Length: 358
Ligand code: F6P
Image 1 (cartoon, helix red, strand yellow):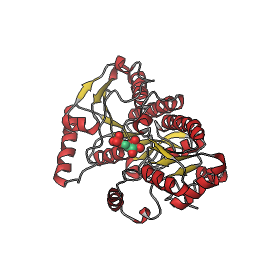
Image 2 (cartoon, rainbow, N blue to C red; image 1 turned 180 degrees about the vertical axis):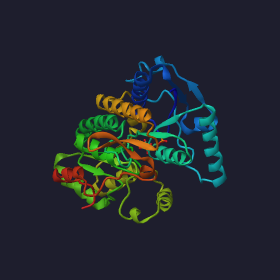
Image 3 (cartoon, rainbow, N blue to C red; image 1 turned 135 degrees about the vertical axis):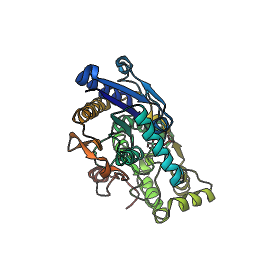
Image 4 (cartoon, rainbow, N blue to C red; image 1 turned 45 degrees about the horizontal axis):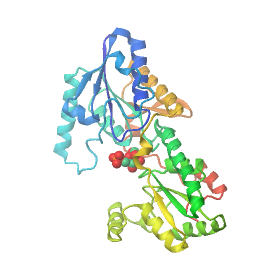
């Protein structure tokens, strides 16, 4: 029985996408031999809508285990960052189904984060055979303890924080590292702990600037402090506002980011020079770590096994340290936030790290 498998990568890229694609492909060629054809769909769902497809050869999947980015290119999901007009949505779904049919696909593998899984579930509910694979440096996909790309980003962010220590120390400054993560603070939490940050600020725990300033002052005898702050952090007052109101208030105050706001306030309150460091997309770049290569390979092989079993409508996941899967409909539309009583938060607090809440 011939199998024709479409693969796409969607949303923000991360290290480990190519390693996962390779894992899927190698396992499929191994399992199905001549009976498999793989179609690469370029630029995520945009490519599925617009028919940007390419027949792949086995050799196309060699030499990509260690490379960052994605060989298929990516774009944000087609229903994000815009007011979804129902007709437009219908047209896009129609176009995606048409490409799937035209390409004679037996199934579609979508590598992505929350938005990608939501669209994967939509396509699955429309009758396509879809399997999702969990990618994101944010580690915020519901139902999986880990996503590929996360640990590489933790390593990179930790390196940034490590490097800030010596210069903060030399100058007696407070250094604020802005770590990616708009909604979830996993990356900030893990890299903050790994990098020995003195304060960790995440969106799930709205901060009180007085508490953060007091924590800096408590460290005054040391002469410097390091704060790891998630890009999506907000204070207790802002926590009462809607996202738009928050953005409006910050615009009125001439403040663009949470870190800029924190740094300005902390400098005023402590009298200590405060600087912001934004590694930004560096956190998404580069070669996947050994951990992520292994994880990506496991996830890729598992997806190939699901294809062999024709088990569609699922999202590959790590559940209790075993590679498994959840129903796409259970994952779609949810976000895995850091719980306030998370063990890592407790451990960090036990070390005296301030989250600015108490
Ligand atoms: O979803 C991953 C992520 O890197 C987030 O941490 C960040 O907020 C966002 O993507 C940035 O997106 P973009 O690359 O589209 O600016």
